[in-house]
Each structure stands twice: as C-alpha cells, then as structure tokens.
Length: 297
Image 1: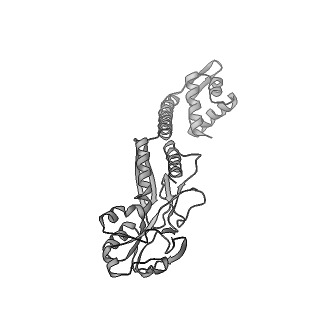
Image 2: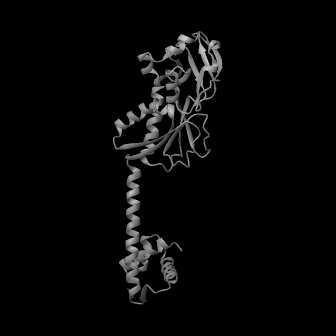
Image 3: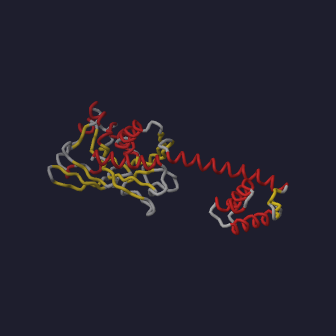
C-alpha cells in the first residue's frame, strides 16, 4: 500500500464526501479508492469512516486522523514547493572542487565574471593538490586534470589548459648558468608540484625536449613552490599567471622566456553528475563556464 497516496485519498474523500469524485481527482477507479481506504483502516486497525447507503461520516478516530493527515501532507507539499523553487532559481551556494593552481588563475577570473552576472550566487570552493573523491565530496561541480581518476558515472568536458613557465630567483641565476635550450635545464634543480607529472615537454624554436623533474623538493601547492623559488631554492614550474607580480618586482626571473611548456596536469575539464536532475544554478554555471573558456580559448 502506498500510504501517502492513501492519506491523500482519505483527505479527498472526507472533503468531497464521495468516493467516486475523490478517486477521479487522483486518477483512481472508485473500486481502487475503496480498497485503499479499507487497507488503510486495516493497517491502522481502526475504522475511519462510517459508511451507509445514504452517505458516510467520520468516526472520532477518523476525525483525529484526518487532522494529522492534513498536517503531514501540508508539510510535504510545502517542502516540495520550496525545493522546487530553490532548484529552479539561480541563487544559493555552489560547492566546487578544483586543483589549487587552476583555482588561483583561470577559475578565479571565471568565477568573478559569473558573480557579476549572478550576484545571488555564493561559492564554497575546495582546493586540492592530489586525488579527491568528487562523489563523496558532494560537490555541485568539480574541475580536474587528466591525472585525476574520474568516475565513469560522471560527465567530463574538456575546458582549457593552464599555461606554465619556469622561474627562478635572481640569486639562483647569479650562482648557476642560464640555460639556453631544453637540454641545458638542470633537472635536479626543479621544484616539483605533485599535481603535475614529473616529466614535461618544453619547446623552443620549434624543437621539443623532454624534461624530467628530479629536484629534492616536492610540494602539493604551487604557492609553496613559488615561495621556495623566491628564496633561491631552485627552479619552479608554475602557472604563468601566478608569476606576473614577482617577475615585475624582480623577485623571480622567467627562464627560457620564448619557450612553451606542455605537461600532464595542465589540461582542465569540468566534472558533474549529468544534466537530467541538476538544479538551475548548476546548469547555468556549467553552461556559463563552458562558453567562457570556449570564448577565451
């Protein structure tokens, strides 16, 4: 027995004082409606309605039960209405997971642009440097690289690539030879971030060279790598956008400035649980982000 349906039917029968009309409003046959009320009374082990050939009336138990049914169904209808309204409006909190480097560069710019358009949206952002469980974390939307393990039940759409560069402090350059090609990069001096692959390709003048980071320092966040580079501890592989201020100030110097770097972990995709049951705010954010990076690229 569907007890909630039986409770709704009971209220309809009480209000209309007619099984046939109550059944019709709920899309049931009169016989089915009568059986549902009988099953409800059996389940409760009490009579709710006095039935005669001339009509029906509530028993004392039926009167109390009808009041309780109205309260329960009213709360459920209110909950459904509030939830429907909340999920159909572009407002509330978006829970997002993203790689640390991406959060402080391209994602920050995209969030600022989205917030300008939707000021009623707030963000709850989790930054990560290694693997993260996107499902257990209950995130509305996640961003990931190819290095993250993506559950097959999630939708994964490629967005963009983060531009990386090599930087070191003026002090480091004063104590070491300045590389002029990929083969001259001292691999043992590279400060490696664990969210990137140790091996990366650097292209200079059309010539590609594979570099294998073998430095003595491994970090989980690019800000630590940057601080270490500023302190003269080695060469940092960093998102280019995070180095502009230090390069302008002279605390970091770009190495092989005309080079381009390709590394596993620089590609960014957006991850979510499919479109069929997403709230309006999540759908709108996904559409905006995809269009934002498609335009930017």
